[in-house]
Image (cartoon, rainbow, N blue to C red; front, side, top):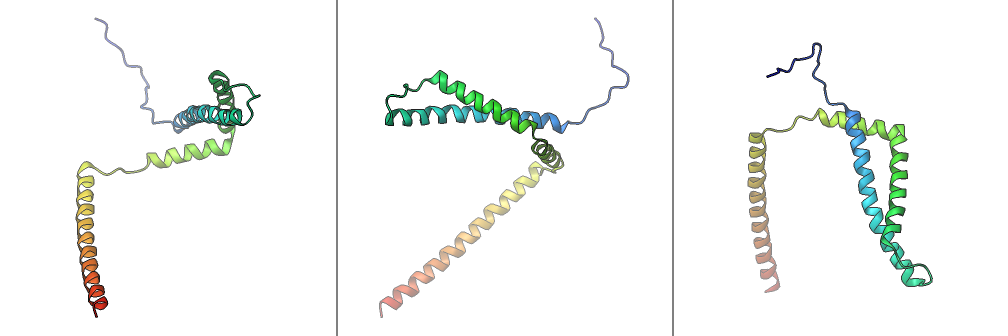
Length: 140
């Protein structure tokens, strides 16, 4: 049985924010394609209902139009240095966030529930007293 040898000088790599930025732009492109494919089809149907001389909406053609627009928009956004830099800076900031533990989350949830109940009781009491006062005033 062959044992795998560890390479000398291997370093644990930290998460590269540019990889996540590339993923964000790619996913944004896919989302834009999905939205545009439906939007182009719907707009084309509306135009066709007004002007029947235009060809009936075709799913393949609307998909190609949406793909062209979304690929062009994604490549444009990808190449904008400011936008890419902004995404990488956001990713770096998010990686520095300290997320609460399970116990802290449970404790905060309990505090929120208790405060909601207290406020609800106070508002109910104020509503009841105001209702009685206005009923007494209208009864005079």
